[in-house]
Structure formats: C-alpha cells, structure tokens
Image (tube, rainbow, N blue to C red; front, side):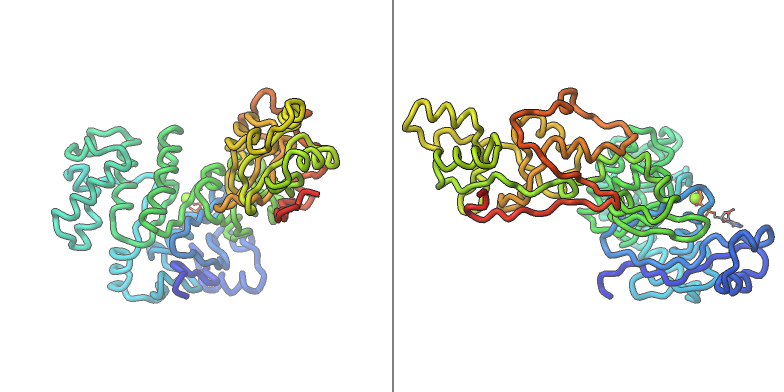
Length: 435
Ligand SMILES: Nc1ncnc2c1ncn2[C@@H]1O[C@H](COP(=O)(O)OP(=O)(O)OP(=O)(O)O)[C@@H](O)[C@H]1O
Ligand SMILES: [Mg+2]
C-alpha cells in the first residue's frame, strides 16, 4: 500500500520472564493480570496502520503501554511477536545494520526528557540529524536555521543549550527532530514539559509544519485536548490493548466503552465537533429571481424571518423580514437593493468554538457553504447550544447566546442523538428549494 507509512500487525511486547510463552498464554485467553508479577504484557495484540502525512495520536492512562508501543516502532524495543513495517521495510528480525539505517533515514523521535549535546550550539544540535545523513554543512545549517525561526529560537542559534530555559531546550529538541529529513516522527509526551501557552503554540506549529513538510507523526499524549487538537486519528490504549481507534469526532461521539467515555468526558467539545455535526437542512433558501414578492411569500408560508438567496445555486446574501416589510412600504424597491450581501458563512469543518462569534453577530442561522458557496446546511444558534450540553469543559459562550432570538427560525431537531450520531443532513439547495 503506497499510502501507508507504518503498518503494525498483532504486535506484542512482553517484559520479564518467558515472554514468548506469555504471548501464547495471552493468545489462549489469559489476562494481563494473570501473568503478573513475573511478566508484564506492556503491548498486547496491537494492530493499526498510519497513513503517510497523518498525525496519529496514542493516548491512555499511565502504564497503558503507550511508550512501549512507540519505542517498538523505531526498534528501541524489540517486539516479542507480531510485525511492524515502516514503509516497505519489516523491522521485526531486521539486522542491526538495517535497524540503524531505518533510524537514521526514516524515523526521528522526541521524548519528554531528552538531552541536547551540551558542547554543540543550538544550531548544531538542530542540524545533527542532517549531519548524520551526511548533508553538506551549508545546506544543513540553512535548513536548521529555518526550523529555528519556525519555533521562535533563531536568535539563540549560536547559544549553547545550558544558556536556555528547559522549555526552550525542549523546543530545540523538537526542532532537531523536525529538521532531520525523516518521513516519520515519533513524539512521546514531547510537549508535556512546556508551559501551557508555549504548548498551544507548539501544537499549532506542529500542525502547520506537518502540512508543509508532509511528515507522518505518531504522537503520545496524556492531554485529551492536545490529542483532539492534533490527531487525525486517535488510538486509545488500556492495559496494553488498543481499545479504540477513530477520528476525534468518532471517539467523542461514539466511545467504544466506559473507559473511553470517561476519558473524553472532559474534552472541550467545542474545539472538536465541527459545523457538519450540528448543521441542519437549510429550509429558507430561494433563487434571487423570485423577487420581493416571492421572498415575502416564503417568509409567510414557512414562518421564517429571513431567507437566503442564491444565484445559480451560489449563496449571494440574505434578506430579513424587516427589510422586506420596509421595502414593501416604499414600493418599487428591488430585491437586489435590499439584499445583505455581507453575511458570514462557515464551512463543514469549522469547529464549533469558531461558530459562536459569527452566530451571535447575525440574526439568521449561519449558512454552511462549500468552496463554490453552495449552501450545504445551516447552523441555528439553538443547535449550537444544544450540541454543547454535555460539555464540562470551559467554553466561551457569548452572554446573550442563550436567549432565543425571535428573528431566527425555530428549529425542531436535536443535534446529537442518544447514540451520539449526528444529524447534519446536507440540504438540497436547488433553485426553488424553499417551498
Ligand atoms: N523496560 C521495562 N521493563 C519492564 N517493564 C516495563 C519496561 N518498560 C515498561 N514496562 C512496563 O510496561 C507497562 C507499560 O509501560 P509504558 O511505559 O509503556 O506505559 P505508558 O503508557 O507510556 O505510561 P506513561 O503514561 O506513564 O508514560 C508498565 O506496566 C511498565 O511498568
Ligand atoms: Mg510513557
């Protein structure tokens, strides 16, 4: 499979006495606890694939096997059973020379605590991976300097590690891993030592770097919000086993069991769920050609106080009841004169936390549009609020968002059902779709 960067099949890592025998016992149904205390099954029957360019997050309680798993991916831990492929290369039973070559050319790793070379400058530390790959000095220092600029440490290029704070050293370590021209980056609690603001910045940097450099990243974290923010997909581990793999939205709305559910209950849902999860069919949409009388008729018949207008299926603006009433009084006013063309739109992947502000600024529901400005659905304010009801985390709900606004159509749908499924049904928005 050309798109698969890492492929893990039935992987076991057992520490202690008689590890292979322990694997056989596990396969026959023995539990992890039955093997203790002489033998610890740290990773049990793990199977997953990571796509090229994906950020794959591993989370789970302390001792669940995250570090053991990630350390087997670059050969630091020898697997007890199973298979690991990095690209086309099988790691299990590979020769030491092959393993070294893979570590040098394909994989770099960042730990929570790791050492920089004390007698090398920051720049030389960052360029180290390229040096090992025998990239010429000028080229590697140029690349290293660019990465240092990205992590905000360019002015420290010629300093030595002990002149930097712990958080800055950590960023140098991350820069070093990013700088090495490897396709796969393994990060074990790499941001945990950073203070919250820097940590947030680094998360954003990582996502940006990932999309510009196209690296495949396996990222371990304890921090749920970090997992949700970074992960394209998340694997949740419990007692050595992967109990669920899914997108942040899957994990949040369809937790596989109580363990996962407990895990995600404190997640700030507004930063994970997207407009697609809460949007509803757009009911009041009409082509601009219907004119003022047509719009007035729609408002009357559908009991809505605003109508979105399209031109050849593209959203061009909206009119409200008040505007229409005013225009009717003055007579002879065309729809083109009163249409509000400056309306906020969002896309299906806009996270809920970014919907509050535009929702409050507008008296109409928020239109969700595709790249051609075709209306896919709308997010009424009440839908936004009901999607948040299970949240325990802090969300910036604007003060007046709770009042029902008589200007917006009343919605009758609950957004997330009891199975956690969402009801974002794209509306058909063909001409005349508003009757
Ligand atoms: N080298 C080792 N020898 C023996 N047991 C080990 C070794 N490394 C890890 N273990 C055990 O394997 C289990 C999983 O440990 P691991 O470090 O992978 O967990 P983790 O999920 O990374 O935890 P944390 O979140 O605390 O870092 C633990 O019970 C641990 O004690
Ligand atoms: Mg660990």
